[in-house]
Amino acid sequence: MIHRTVIASFLFPLCLVNSSCRTGKTPVEVDESHMRDSVVQVIEIDRVWSGHPVGFALLTHNGRQYIAYYNAGRNMVVGQRDLNDDKFDLRVMPPTYRETSGGTSTVLGWDSHNYLTMDIDCRDFIHLAGNMHVDPLTYFRSTAPEDIFTLKQQMEMTGRDEKKCTYPRFMKNRDGELLFHYRDGSSGSGNEIYNIWSCETIKWSRLLDQPLTDGKGLMNAYQSQPTLMADNWYHVWWVWRDTPDCSTNHDLSYMKSPDLKSWYNADNEPVELPATIDNKTLIIDPIPVKGGIINLAAKLCLDDKLKPVFAYHKYDAAGNLQFYVAERIGGRWVSKQVTNWDYRWEFSGGGSIVFEVRLNSFIRRKDGMYELSYYHIKYGKGTLLLNDDFQVVGTVKKPSSIFDSMKPEGSFPGLAPLTSDDLGRSDEPGVRYMLKWESLPSNRDRARPEPWPDPAVLYLYKLKSQRF
Image (cartoon, rainbow, N blue to C red; front, side, top):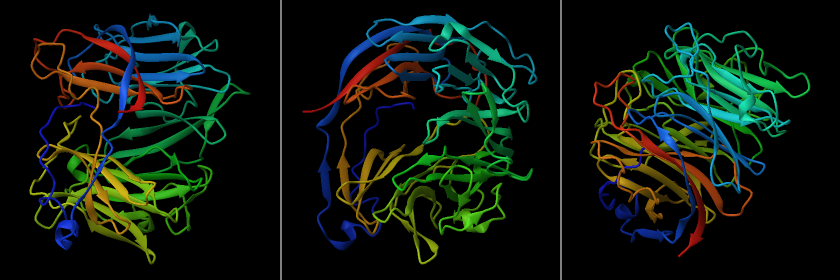
């Protein structure tokens, strides 16, 4: 995510609907600004491409750390270190160029979709994928445990539906088995495919006999990764999109599963796979095309009865973009507007866009209330405090990020910090790791004319949570 310093307008009374302002009650402000991260260690890794943003990968696992990124020459690089080492051993992957859409590549072009991702299986073999946007599968696997220098390109997984891959993701199920999912097809016409890795046979196979979602050649689902939540079920939500134009997103939808194989709607009724737009029981809010929802602009949490509750944005009757919360009541989804902003984010077109509004998180607090954290180009960053009826009753003052106050190291106009979270986790209590570098904003995946900014420094940050 690009972090920008923005002067935030105080929310009361501008943005509240059915709020404490309306009832005359004093707004609540919960101050959690003392819960900050301190910097324990910073490691300078390499110099990297800064002409446009693209996601890098960081994975902490079993006392070691692995990274994957694009260097100053836009070549794919992998690295590893023991956590007590103060530098990474780096390997530049052999360059292969995607001269046409029929080839794989380890060299980055101008597409901000082409992030890198990685994971480790039950025998500690490394799996790496990325640099794909409607391209053939680009995937590597190590031939020795915990060793990036043995990563070898694999030209297929199952050998089916691997010519137009986008959004590669690794994940683990509750049994620790490694899964890989991706979109087969293009924006506006694609299916969501899931594979599972066997440590016994050393092979990938299909987790499902059919795609999880199917746009039937008319649309595709921009879906979340299946998330295992407190009810011990996996939850997935998505919007449908009709064309590469992001304004054609519509119909926020949802389903859940106990095992990633059998799927159910919110009322525990079985869902026949693949899920399609024809199954109206999966639709949370029938937002129309050009109705104000962007892909992955929704967040899920569970209420005190472990029922799903969604926060998302769409246009109100006046055409302004607002946040809404939807809950299941009496066998139907009931939606409530929670902001009353006087700003319309008009998004459209293809390629990677710069977000003017972003829903960062939506969680249920231990005190039974809810938090909705956001970024808004006009109103800045903030966190709304909602009661159990989803009325806004105040705000939560969050600690500032250590990156918010950082000025760009580079002097090129438009540079801003980028960060990547850890795909794994540290075994040290309160410790987490992040990658940080700088880049220009996205450019709709189109080449920028020269001059370009100088390469940026890629850093590893070790952070520890503490109270002040």
